[in-house]
Length: 348
Image (cartoon, rainbow, N blue to C red):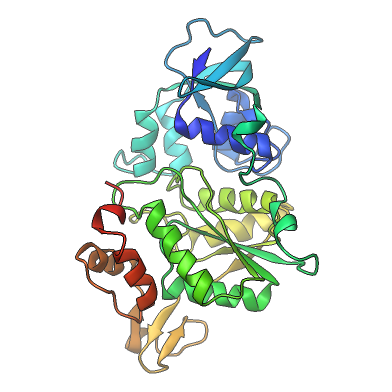
């Protein structure tokens, strides 16, 4: 039997429920390499990030053998082992497009065992019942809803994200807000802070028949452009027809260009049918001349009257127990987050 991590248990749920379609299990080495270096599965479908099962050693692991999988000492499923392999540093550098050992994605991967196994999985139904599943949005929205745009986030809603979401609701029939609630790095917002903010937005401001909110329990990779496409493919599987990519999607620090993810989305869409369309939107900011949230595409004052809606400033204010400027975040949202208590707002 194999004891698996919390992260791999979440992966199991999404294999079994179709969110990771067309994958039916953890990648073998040939598929892993093709994803890492070519952003494709062995069948040549686009897939941009590898999903592998880590083990502490290869003892008693034999190719062709079926092994029971345990999570927290409970039998959750099994894997038919196809392959066992080592993850190399150069492969990690390729995934994250950097050799900087301070990149949070590289740090995290190096904390995992480098020993991996691949194979088709089976998960006991009680462990994924009620979670996100393939085409879930068809069961959520009215049949008249034909176009659904997905929005990925790891932060509580602020004015810039609200602006993007409202644009999306003008273009599409419905909006699926799908905050990532799996592993995130230290200093990021907690799941509680993110979801409580969105519940306020949903209850007080958004049209309930056209907006749905549910968390996505998978790890944040901080892999920039590749992760943006990965996020889009998961939302496609859940039933989205469109996906928003804004400024520095899934980025961290200065590792990726601010619109590099949009460029990759455009490039892949030229040559492949990804099954989802993209809304590639410019960074919103507050213009003191226009006196509203705008972007450089519809405002002439970027260099003279721009006030950035700064996630860094919002974090700083909330960390100090302050209400951020209403230009950056709705006071109702800020108050709701602060009411959680500082110890519940940020990941330690």
